[in-house]
Image 1 (cartoon, rainbow, N blue to C red):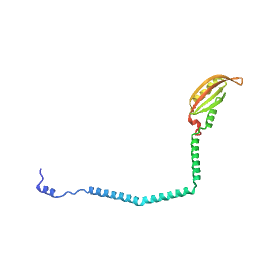
Image 2 (cartoon, helix red, strand yellow):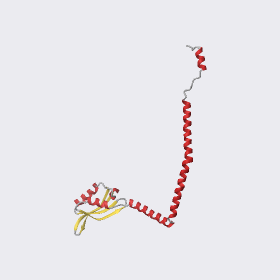
Image 3 (cartoon, rainbow, N blue to C red):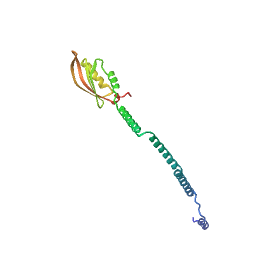
Image 4 (cartoon, rainbow, N blue to C red):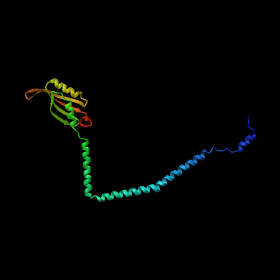
Length: 186
């Protein structure tokens, strides 16, 4: 069905109104742009000079403080600070053997003693173990092997050895300890 001529004429004459959302969006965008420029110029004209003034005042205070202390005292203070820093680094990386000896005391069989202990790098400790019998030696080695602080163990030169007219079982044992044994944090 075709539209009457009157309706067609009225539709062609009347302008349709846009909903207005595009002009609102344009106004909002210009408002944001104006706000950004206002903030930028406020920072450039107000805050930047304030920061530059503060920086120059602090620089003057630093210069005055450095002039108040003579150069030889400055170098002595710098040398002392360097020594303290180096000492702090050395103590931080220093191995502490007291916890190891406490651990060794707790993990020693009653009929066993040690004639020589040598500490090496890499948490490696060489011990000469003397036990009254082979069974005591085996029990001591089992204690070392079962200790969670020992990561590896090497045993060599197991042989009977006379000490003060008594025959003892002697073994050279190398313990590879976990680093936690050498700190007080345990």
